[in-house]
Image 1 (cartoon, helix red, strand yellow):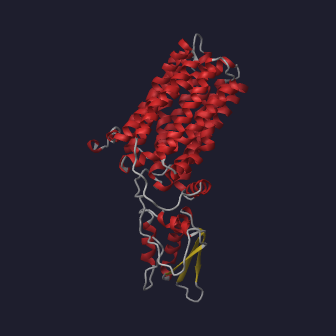
Image 2 (cartoon, helix red, strand yellow; image 1 turned 90 degrees about the vertical axis):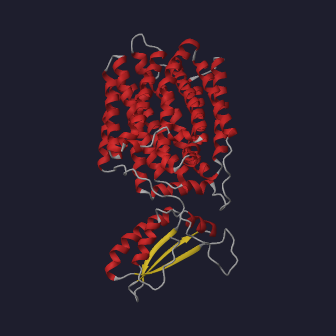
Length: 521
């Protein structure tokens, strides 16, 4: 039913999303131009292969280190304000980088410092932007919106590096840095004009440290999300070799210069746009795991061809294949996280996904740079191709879950109980005890459901969960858990989603007592 297939362009019907998307497209264009300038300037400043590879690592490392902090901030502060602060910070850093390069004061380590700081701004900005997607478009359009974001970034990737190579060749790296500085202005203007609806008054804001721990706990107790993080780390670790070592590959081609490097990156971007455009059709015909394995294997071919081919034309075709596989894998990872996570924790879940991906990219950029220095560029790229094939085989044990749209809106079943004693938000601990009466023939099924109940309780913030059986009345089972304060108890209950209600319904069906067990679900 192709006619019923939602268009990847459908999210652009929503005005605010469209405006931010276009401004992000311009900003991404500037960032890619800046990346070409930084990588090529490093090759002019030093002959060290590992320092050249560290340019990529210096952008990836802060996203690995600070994305979780950015996710906690995105889930607890107005996302528009967070994005404004991040964009303003990157504008200032880019201005300082431009000035330093223009005055001829740049050094290898100073260049890495500036790119690291820009990466810090990205780590703060990205979770808020990606978490805002679900607020700007309907949940049914989230997959298209994520794919559209990939198209936008990779559309700039297809043109930005080539333009960056021309700018560097004609006017120098400082001019590329200046273009990036100016590219932030449009996004700043759009964010200033965006007036989102204020969030309804609710519970007090979580402390940032507690919010970060809550995000880690949610991922740790969500097995499907854990599989995504492992696979995204492996993909980033192995695939980063191509982009990290491409400046050196380009420089080794006879008669090459920054323009060829930009054109090769452009070929990668063209492939990425093509991959994003066909991602929806592939998702209809193949499972998520099949697409991810295809991406691993295709990128392995890209790395191997880049390692052994002397022809820039063949390398360009290989990079186009690699770009398509890159965007297929990362878009599918992102969509899986978005559709598997409720709104209260989506910023932190996305940030942990980014942390895993960019941890792989940062470690890989450093690792493949050292390998290239010690064993040669071709051997390093062939080793990364072998690592990608291993990553595809890991899917036999850690398969990506099937793509589905869950109802993760709050269930809103819980009502604050009437209490006889005066209580403050910080009062606690709160101890909850729930009694079930289960027939002997239902005990096995009951224990199976309660194992899932335990996971959801702990995932949403409960502490010290236990299940006990009454020895004098063997059909009586008692569930206990604690919340440290009244506020955390209320927060725990408000995190229950419609998808989680299935567990409560199963328990009520198994319960044989005269009264329905109260459990908040």
